[in-house]
Each structure stands twice: as structure tokens, then as C-alpha cells.
Image (cartoon, rainbow, N blue to C red):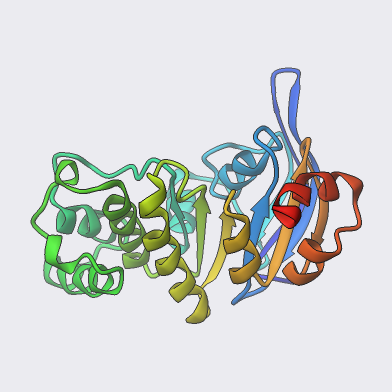
Length: 244
């Protein structure tokens, strides 16, 4: 079994079924990119993995244990499976450093000093150490997203989920965020990334999943999926990218 296993996952909002019988597993050290059109269920799948959405049915396992249960258990799980959102979700009334320290103090009960040292370590890693005293309102979108990544890393998670990490950014800022994620991939961090950046997905993932209308239409190594997709829906989706 992989580090995360999803079995027969369904998610419906009223009569609208967004995810239909999803099965997949991810091994430690894998980088999985999830691609697909808007509305195909990519972000909902990620939110189900982090229990921001509760699946209608099906099971998610983390290291062979079913996730869920009490809020305490969910918080514990989220400290191991971090999430980076498209809209950064930073606290505007806190400095960059305070943003990074908050989770590890509250959830992991680290001391102030230990939280500070670890936060600065990860802010250095993403190139944001010079901005520790800045407030989010003083930063560009790319800088905010790098702080959000550092904040997720301070929890020292086993898996990191990224939900369209560059979609809220101006084009010139996309590269700086993707470069940080590429570095994390090289270091062997297990990641699941929902992205519309096709070249990035092809370059960074060990496995690419194409979602279409709430199902996994195709899943393969990126060189196979991008150069020789088998499913007609994948072919149609990728044709712009391949021919572009």
C-alpha cells in the first residue's frame, strides 16, 4: 500500500456528483500532478484528501489507516498532509514569520524559539527570509505563495497537497513558485499537485493523472501520458498543448 490510498471515493453536492468512484494510490516520494478541465473534480478531490470536504462515500487511507474521526484526529492528520491553496490563505494581521510559526506552535506545540528557528529555515529555503517582518499586504502574489509554501513546510509534513498554486498569480510570478516546487520534488517530498501548467506537470511529476467529468480518465508516467495518450478525452485535452 502507498502512503495515501483512495478507494471508491465519491463526492456529491446535492444531486450533482462531482467525484465518481475514484481509486488511486501514491507512494512515498512520488510527485503526482492532476490535470484536467475546470469542473472535472480536481480541486474537490484534493479537498477530500485533506478532509476540507467530507467524501459522500469511499475511503481515504493514510499509511494504512482510515482518515477521519474526531477533530483532534483530523488536525493530527492535516499536520502530516499539508495543503497550499491558490489564494495563499495567509493571516493579514500577522507578519510573514508569525504566519509560519502559528501552525507549528498551535498544532505541534513547539516552543516559540523552536518554531522561530524552523520557520526561518523554511523561509530561507523559499527565498523569503529577508521578508520575515513584512505583512502579507506588502508582498507580491508570488512572494505570498512562497510564504504559504514555507508555512506548510514548517509542519514538516509527509505529504504536501497543492491546489492550483499558480492560478492566482500574474504570469511573471508563476516561475518563482514553480521553481520552489521543483526543488522540493528533487528532495523527494511526496506531493500531489493540481495544476494547469502542462509543461511543469510533464517535467516535475512521476505520475500524471488526467481527470474528466469526475473520473480518472487516464493515469500514467508523464512522458507516456503527454506524448501518447490512450484515452480520446485525454488526447482532446492535450492536443492544444502537444501541438502548441
